[in-house]
Image (cartoon, rainbow over all chains, first blue to last red; front, side):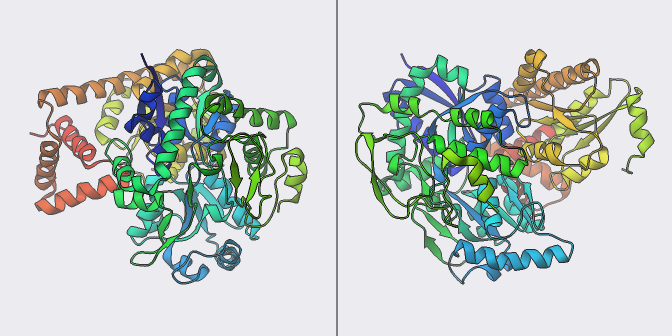
Length: 402
Length: 209
């Protein structure tokens, strides 16, 4: 008899692992019956999770931490035993701006694009119409990645440019109407803007932080405790879905599944493009291949590194303008649960990192790392500005950021 | 809608009319809620169905209570606005009276979220929220009834019916009517059949046919 788990999601390509774990029977093989609930806003995905409509949710990583810390609503402890993927987002600008900041027919170098954008931001600010960027949520990796990049290029968010929330389905329209000049959003929404000719892609977020944490599988802490055994089985199923998702032999099949009405209800062609790390950067223009645009499986991509949660907390301190609080930092760190990930995958073929935390951004080239199970080689995980995040010195890190 | 004068805001706290904004992309559902709330005394109700200019409109309305359907993609935008905007005189928070989890669960079940200005007495909020929940549930029932009465219309038939309504009510040629629905679906991130269903439901409620 299988255990039922209800998982909430937003129709985005990176909701792929729970969907494929269900569709390909990986969950059933593990004795888990997944039922999926689609919503149209993170607020509603979170409401369902908090009020028991769902057991788990596809969630933007910073929102899991914000909810635990009680930012914006009363605190409720969430836990993340599995990361659903890294990166997969892009920065898309209105065509006339995009053409001024990136080389013809390519995505740009983040520092160079930023330098060119800084001039435009200054012009627009002087004209009393500061540039406005849309992100999907205040507590989203999109917001933190975009702000990290802008600030690193000398463009101060909230001072030189505005950053506001725009729901992904409205991004293309907001660009078209001139409500925003740029968006940082996941797929397929950049491609939708490109197809409509209202935006052009200038960067992928993987260029800002090569291994940036994106969506997570979040549960209420109490639910994880109660259903730990079923969640461990779910994690094994999600891992198999990850291996299936990244295999080029399955791309046609998986994009057709994800495109279906009950899931993304979108174009299989656009979805396949994202899955295969490809971006059509302008309408009628070139399709470029940027390896690891989405990162769903290799290098234990789904391992919930405590240092990633801590990095997100530093960005929350930075952009919410709140004082660094060691107790909050500890609470944020505890949201990510490598212990559950390990216990789920012990004895399988999946590599298990030996450490639970790492110095983020420290790898320039690929390196073999210590594991407690299997072998693992990690490639560069650098930030575009070369900064390094050492979780043992979060305050020092914050003081070094612009 | 003229901007509020400062003394209007002051008067409000002395127990004058409560300003309620109903934000719903479904005009049909919004009108059902509006009709329900109209039975309450001392309430001014403002219905917003357009996404564009939503935040500016909320700023103008300066509501005490905001009711919004859970399926509305603009919720994240609105929550951020409430959290960081200084455009509103008074802070608005999600209705999270922790002592009353049952009522929140009922809201989520019914599909409505509510945001309430800080400091408003629970006794004044409760009847409004209860009514909203009732009306949301009533709307769901209506939709179910409609589906049954139509013998679980095939999607194609629903789309055709909606197309005919658009052709008739707006004098559109057939391809244009379909294109309009497809555009609305794309803009709102919905399926065409969802748009078509909304049109058919709205037409029923508005006394069409």
